[in-house]
Length: 141
Image 1 (spheres, rainbow, N blue to C red):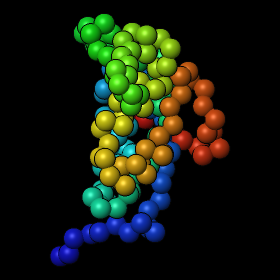
Image 2: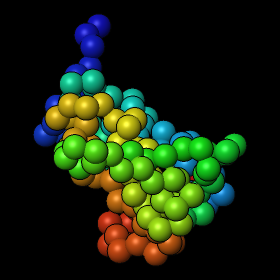
Image 3: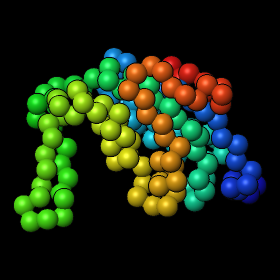
Image 4: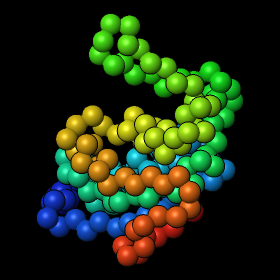
């Protein structure tokens, strides 16, 4: 018996909706990362991008457990001397919750060409409205 290896030309991609309302941000991001990578499919092949499209809705209603709203910071550097910028997650979730969700999913995807192409299939919405009804996405519970 030989091992099945998926080919990039034979992959059919589905669309899924994940609702983040009332759920921990990291749990939703981990589920989205698995779907984007294709690990939930039986024909998963590590060297082939066989993931699906994911739409995450209600990001503003995602929950951060514990004291993460006050103690967790998003840091980035501008490239200039003394250019370290910090934003508390309380303000990040109030102003840009979809960016916080994208950061969480991006951290769970491999830093390779397959991971970068998987991130292009992620759509994040602040509310419960999205513009991808034509693709007939399935709601995941």
